[in-house]
Image (cartoon, rainbow, N blue to C red):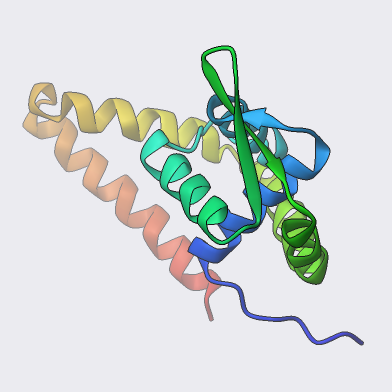
Length: 151
C-alpha cells in the first residue's frame, strides 16, 4: 500500500489550482469557478486566496501566464505537471472526500442547518428572549448528540 503524504490546507489549495489547470488554461475567475464545481460546494475561493496563490505558483515556475485580451490566462508548466503528478493521489482523495461530505451533508440535512444558522446569525437581535431559550435547548441537544458520536 502506498504511503500517503501529509499536505497542508494551504499546500492542498495550490495542488487544486494545478489540478484544474491540468484540464485547460484558465483565468483567475475561471479557476475559482472550476474549483467550486470540482468540490461541489456552494463556495467560491476568494480572489484574496486565489491570486496570491497564482503569483506564488508562477514565481515557483509551476504555472505561466499570458494576457488574452484583458484577462490573464494561466497554464500549467511541465514542472507544474510533474509536481501535480507526484501528489495526484492526495489531491484526488481530497476531492473524493469533499464530494462525499457534500452528499452526506445533503442527506442528513446539514445544508438546511447551515442556511438557518446563517439567517439566525444575521437576525439574532430580532429573536425574542423566549425563542432564544428554546434555541439554546435545541442547540445543546444537537451538540450532545454530536459529542456522543466521538465516543
